[in-house]
Structures are given as structure tokens and as C-alpha cells.
Image (cartoon, rainbow, N blue to C red; front, side, top):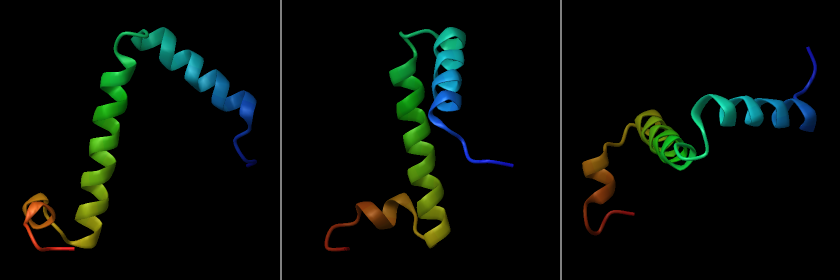
Length: 57
């Protein structure tokens, strides 16, 4: 199995654009970004409350 090239990424982006439309793409991107951040925090064993606490770095 090979790596994903530029053509494949372009095809995936086009399919997503057709399925969801240009209006919903920012909403989907924001939700995906939030999900990835929460997943990474869960892997580290932190919670959102831990991250938002003042004086914690």
C-alpha cells in the first residue's frame, strides 16, 4: 500500500465539498479540530478543567 499523494487528497477534498457543500465546511473543520484537541488531552490524561485552570502550564 502506497502513500497518499496530492491527487488522492484533491479527490477526497472534492468529494467532501460535494457531499457537505461549501457552507458547512468551516463548521465541520471546527468540530474536527475540537475532537482532535480533546482526543490529545485524553491521551495525556488531562481534562478540559485541568487545561483551563489558572497557573497551570
